[in-house]
Image 1 (cartoon, rainbow, N blue to C red):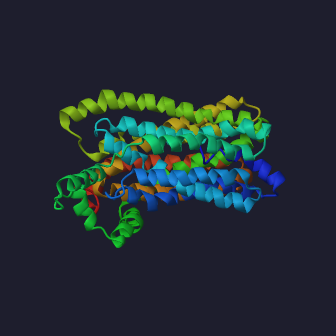
Image 2: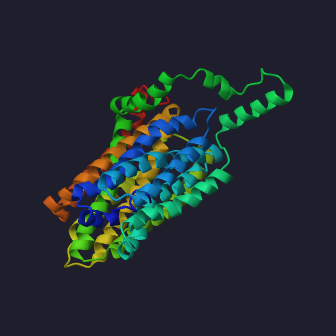
Image 3: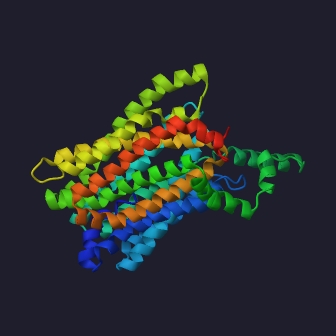
Length: 429
């Protein structure tokens, strides 16, 4: 929610601080860019047995909470933008590494349920931000949205600091070995993680988490396509924060609070998607795995083959019903349809990648995270001029056409996946 809770404040920054529309949008754009950069540094640290999951979580989120105080007090645009960038950077590990923590705790066959809940929070959080601050910024000041971040994040950090257990198995075993050495005096007792950690070097960590993701996106068509597809969807999602004020503010004359309510369509879409996705996992995938094993990674893509069609359908509905002559609910339904498709496609892609490239999963997700955040950063900045210059109908139709082309891509990936894996230098054979 920390990314989009800022957006209802943008008109006040323009009127009270003299910011341009692009300058005000940077508060959202820089935050999104930064939380794509943070995992490149912090996620690898959580894989080192000596460190584990908890220190990166607690340290970075503690800084995020502290930064919320000056972000709520600052009264100049440059200060706001710097603090928003730092908030996104230090807030990112809790978002990016959450899937790894769930993987520590749950079996492979049940993990899709938990990953979908984690993704539900990450998808619906930005949709809730404008609703939470839309009414308060009107009633109080634009600073109010920044205070709300502190009120939400502070108790969570305290709960994390006091109660969160370590989940990374190599870290748990390393600490157990340390206790045994103290009890027995036998300094030869070491965990497997300690032995692996001794072979780590700074160069290897940098290579694995900065160079490897880019190398895979360039040299492996499957990785390149999925990264581009996810980045496109993420960019479209964040373009809504600039498009909705033009549609529901300018066309339908909604207040900031009422505009925030339109984002609930994204949440409703995600709830519907989870119902379908869980039913598919429970009634189709689990029985099939028990009978036939995991099978080819492309089997993870089956729901996406059909859900991908919902993306252009939803966007075309939004494009051609965003008209004050038509009821506002029509365009909101289009966004809901789009949201159903996005959620299912992302679930399938995020399961397909680690099944195909298990030894490079961390690199893949770090690179994917950075790519989609970079595209979302650009989308926040260019989407308003695009929607204004082309018109909402034409701009949204162009985005729908791009997602329609990606439908062919996801079918091609499913059909030719085995051949691509056979030729890939990264995929598990």
